[in-house]
Image (tube, rainbow, N blue to C red; front, side):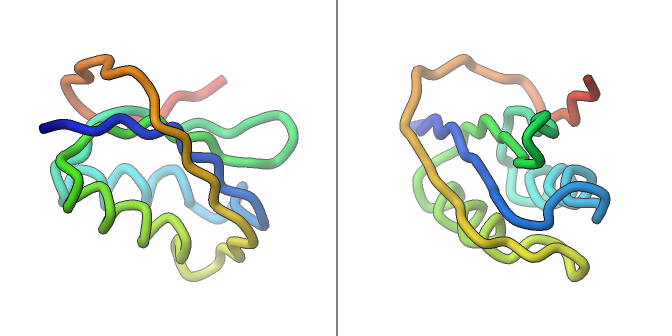
Length: 91
């Protein structure tokens, strides 16, 4: 069973390789979806994976890469979009 989460990450999460590292972690875990920077300084992630893998992924999102300082991660379940891979979206 696949789960879809919309994840918003707040804190010092832009300009610290958060998106690139998120992709590497997602690829390693087999999570599919996307990650992008938001104009307000947050990072937004759409992720799809089995619940156990999703839990591991969200746990990582709360840490982020070393230079990041995550202050808040919010998740909201969403509709499955059947992503084929995980990509970094550049606006």
